Image 1 (spheres, rainbow, N blue to C red):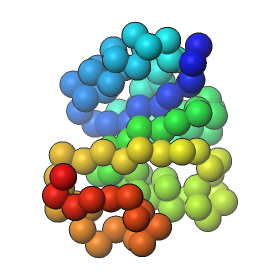
Image 2 (image 1 turned 90 degrees about the vertical axis):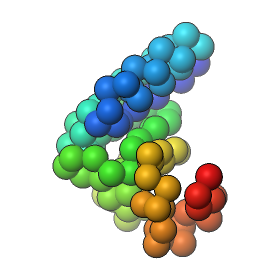
Image 3 (image 1 turned 30 degrees about the horizontal axis):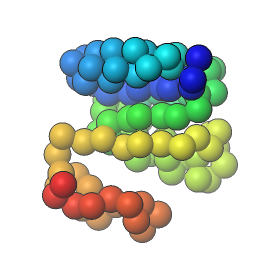
Image 4 (image 1 turned 180 degrees about the vertical axis):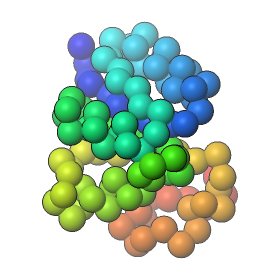
Length: 102
């Protein structure tokens, strides 16, 4: 196993594509379909990486990152995805890597 990766997205198609690709590279993939599962599985499995949709039912990906930074959840490298580029507008300054509209 190369890494344990938690994928969270309410779109099963996105989860399936990422799972297929990452598993094919030898990673162990854990899937979550909403923010509540994301928080529970992050605590249970302690992944090496989280790939999450920013806007999902339950706890948003943004809220989970806020919890990690506040010390309320394990700090894990996180990639945030969104199908809505405008959703990135107004995100906290701790996300300097976000390029709007790309």
